[in-house]
Length: 153
Image (cartoon, rainbow, N blue to C red; front, side):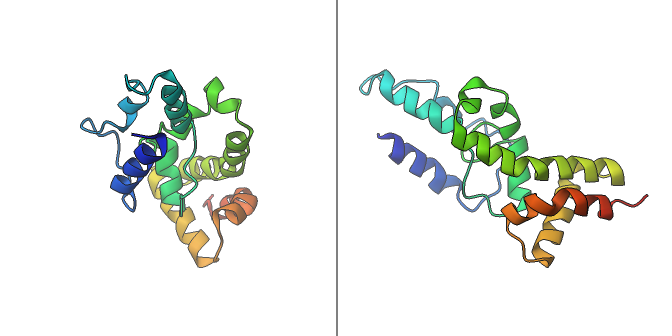
């Protein structure tokens, strides 16, 4: 099976569903660790590259937070990916991470400041994003200052 077919199969199974955590019956993480004897090691390298790629189809703050904490579509959590050399060497992934990092930090800051779970904080930030008709990139640009205003002192 080609890399694109495997990624497509994984995406098709999980598309539209929030990933609630690791699924022991899922083989998506193990795909990258087991080369196909018929395809050789070249496919393994390509599959490993998929594991270190952030999901471009994240549509809201809750999905973004899920991707950061538990991973999406068979990929590692972004918090784990971001500390690995394979991820840090990729300019596109570094840029994507840099755009999303202010949102991750804002979720943590809001959770601490309002004594709530990070998931609840992500939900509040998503409500704010939706109410103000912002995309994730726009939110990333304004979220730090706006979260300070949300925290009750």
